[in-house]
Length: 189
Image (cartoon, rainbow, N blue to C red):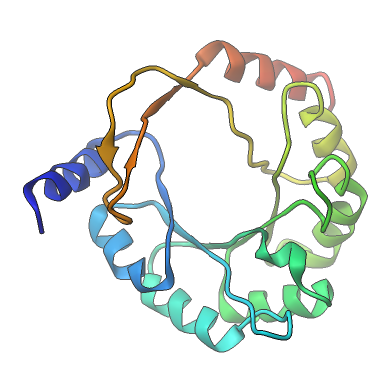
């Protein structure tokens, strides 16, 4: 492992911010070793179904880290079958926009998935959620968690991504935006 990559791993482990690795399948062990809080993946077959064999293997490999299946879920032909397969494979969260361009547009479908999951897996609405629509997405879906991006770039310094090896610009969460988002959610119980 290079010195810069080793320093990046150390920075991840020291960070109080949860880090979920969203990387290629071969990196579940690396994510765990790096101190990631979870693994995000999404594997489909050529016919548009969840690749349950590979997903199950990667869930086992990531253990004890929780695994989130990303928005590849929105591309499957049969979301109900995919949901049941992912529950059986041990996936803990499914990130979805309800098969639409945004979670706001797919919020009714997401609500159906939340009800169908019956607490066996977290249905995580994501995609286009912002200060203006977060409350409606939560209210209309019944979801207990949402995936929302509110970063504000704080520095032009680049560093290597410890799991993928490419440079990116670090960002710092804007506390004002987070407070506004939480206030928005409180207005939509």
